Length: 435
Length: 154
Image 1 (cartoon, rainbow over the protein chains, first blue to last red):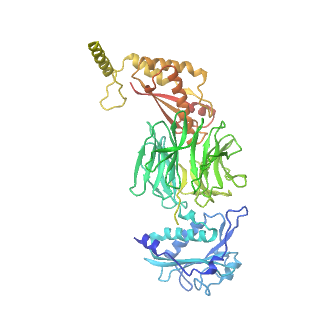
Image 2 (cartoon, chains in turn blue, yellow; image 1 turned 180 degrees about the horizontal axis):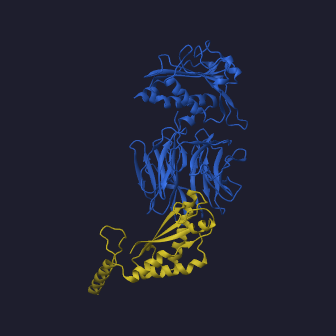
Image 3 (tube, rainbow over the protein chains, first blue to last red; image 1 turned 90 degrees about the horizontal axis):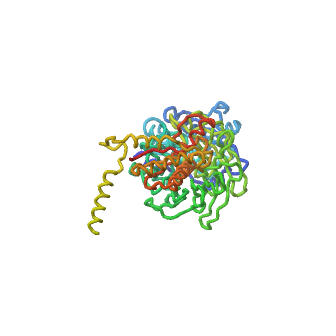
């Protein structure tokens, strides 16, 4: 109930024309900005720090923002005069002390009725140079258990205000956790490691989960000691179906934007990529040749499909225009490229390449034709997947030993691990959040 | 003539009843294997076919072994075999599921060309999910790139 109230009553405060002219952070171009952000101490009244829920929310926001590689948090100790302020908006904000500490953005948090029990909280973000408000929100009836959701919603809005896309904090990753030989189930987790939960509990091994665009279903391949099948988890009923098909394989399902599933199924000698209808029956062939064709993924329009094919010998990545039927080769280097994932904007294809040191993740820019290596091990980096923002990439890696899920970006850089509890985790796949 | 056909049909029906395939592991299943049948099952399941990396063609050195399996399956037509295709750990999971299927299919097709009834055969790919040897290095990898033959009914 509280969640619904939060969702319903999250209010945009003081939307002003000035906010539209505020700073933007280009995270997509080659010269990615670094943004320095300061968090003012949460307050209940002028110069009175909020030390209960206020402190907890501050920590959650800090944890969230640490996942943004283009954001550097200002050390509170470097702010002369401290971070406990007279107010939460101009003219009671002393921007100068934050400018001196090198901060580009200041976030203020105000708990007008105190921060114990169930209370409202105001969160606002300002440019320190101009004092322009980037945005502000009030979250009503917030209790301690709502704090993670408030942190995620605020960070999503902040990210959207800065970059134009807040999908990262609105997404949930589906992934696979293995518990033994031929024993693995599907789990969910926020990319920040929160809301970890298991959604299937089946004998056999689940692989390759994929979200439906409406967020209702997660489909996956399922192997037991007798057959392959398509697993379908319905978030409405919390139930799982296991759907068999004629033939021997069900590999790498993926949803199209119209909520239909594409999946590689047996059809004679080689697996063929089929489109299924809304009741998971074969509708038509999307791609086939006298070779292996597997692992389809789509852009947000559903007109482009990246997939893996052995049509030129070893496995390579190809892109098919589903309108014209034209297929072009994407991966041009290496002898073993697999597990492609197409960005939602259709401009980038990410995939894993077998090297002498294990698999590594590469991004092919379909506009410039340039390929960029974005992971460097150690161990093996596999199963890359683009967030709906076409910026963040989740992948599985054995760099930590047993296998975990990590985040990087289209530009590469230091990878950050997603906490998924114990046990080897793999196959991260992003949900497609609706705003 | 009609009477002859009826007698023939009855005899065939009774024969088929006695020869009806029994699934191993079925509740109430009683092991009634003759020593010959037991030996045949042993021979069918014992020999594995191994493959080169990212390949699924049956090497010549395994063809005699498959011929032996085919002869037994033709002799014991109630035997039903699942061919399980497997890969080593180096490739990626989805592609290896497809490659494992191709490996199972390669043996399947060879057995069928030798006269085995396709109805006696089924296929399953485990990709890299069911290694027989743990560890890295070619000695482990070469043992994991394989077809297993499992008798699922007889």
